[in-house]
Length: 244
Image 1 (cartoon, rainbow, N blue to C red):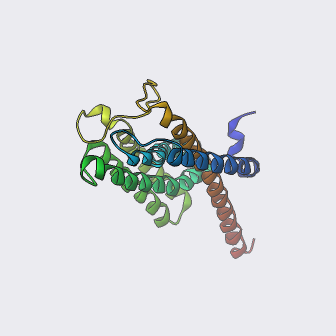
Image 2 (cartoon, one colour):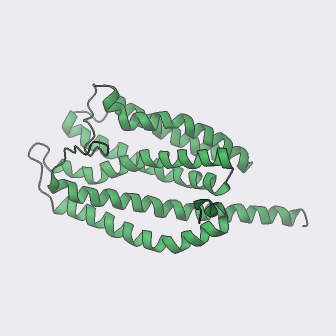
Image 3 (cartoon, rainbow, N blue to C red):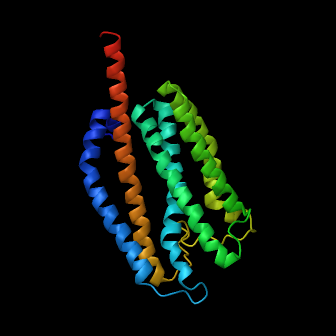
């Protein structure tokens, strides 16, 4: 059995409809558990007080803002190389979700930064690259909406996604490239495992992060299915107008 069989829209929809209920339940349970545990079951930090608890939203949303673009990059490459329509529609479906995650991360970052840094915003390398990533999300969504031919839209947005990936990488690794700016280093580095978050905070944070991942997958599957059905309806309407 090959994963490419799910490039067939019928098979993709069949799998998606079986998986989605499980994903929605696990996502709701994980997000609720992570946030309730984080907000009400952890102590205040000795330096940051209760403001530290914003990490249970800020860190997962920032992680998903970057990873959503990574998922869009992979599906865009599949479209450019293998011309599977489901992959292009999956990238299109993920963009608004990633954009919302980016907005949440920017807002919660400002709310966290003001009492800690004394300012809502700084032209820090990581913050700046993250803001540019948000603008790329806006541009990507606008480009899909502006082009009528779906294949042309998929081609151009895939190229835009390749360019925007530079800023997704910078958002992830800027604190390593430039040893300057207000933003601290990564709290939970996946590669090294040398996290700086105490276990008291890390367990609910990990649950919240898992919940955001599951929520993202559920929303992308749902939106991709909707895009496939819209494409089918448009094709049937076009055939009807041609009298076929």
